[in-house]
Image 1: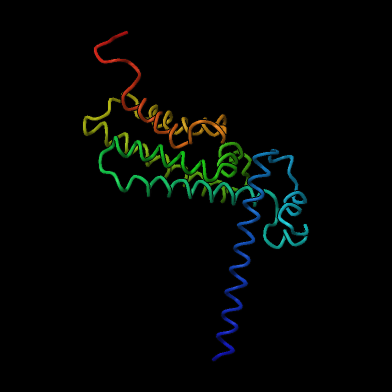
Image 2: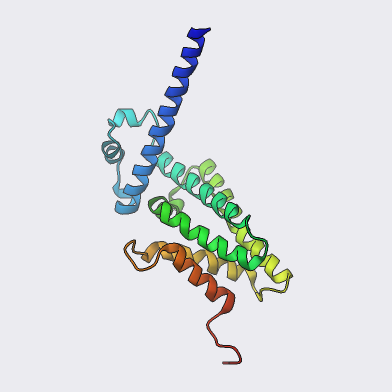
Length: 211
């Protein structure tokens, strides 16, 4: 029995080590892809920056596209789950809209390299299985804000003649933030997202004015 327990512990440690190492590879690869461009990064570059030989790297991933696909799928899944969790604490659609946008920005701030890869390199996925999973999670993420807008319209809180246009605007606001945001700026991504939410909810025109 003790020998069986020791064997089980060793296997668990080995599995944990492999998982941690794969996470390290994905984190480093995401940073390289974001900074240098996907096509400019080789398996050698990734191996060297992780501290592995190229041969050892192939024990974890067969090819560079598999690394890219793993980054894209994991990122869009975590993003979808993050925004879903954020809106659970709120009941009204307007509060959920703010929570959704803040959660998007918070996720971007914590995972900037992976987020950049998600935005710019999803089209590089040629593996149908990975691409389909990524598309499914992206649809789930988009449906979260789509349902918020729909509920706001149904409850008479939002005026949206074309709800899909509002969905695109909300999502794009943080997508574009990822392109120009500077980490040493005056505002955090969450503060910027909150300002955007105020604009969407209240507009920029003063009351009793027209155009």
